[in-house]
Length: 87
Image (cartoon, rainbow, N blue to C red):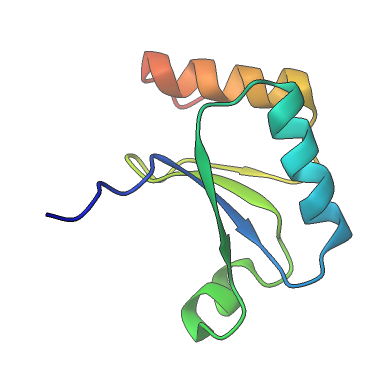
């Protein structure tokens, strides 16, 4: 039996300083477990996220939070998603 996919995915680029900062912000926000997924080598992800990384994605409903984000924006995004709101 395979492990379930994580709910939260941080799309990142290779050697991306902004992505490193995004991980720090998520830690400061005490975000739930998330998986970093690199976009390099995947044409679809490169096309969709190439200029946008880092992007925090909710794998359950497709909502995304583009960089730049801070602790307050991450917490609001997580809370809105928890409540099922799209604002």
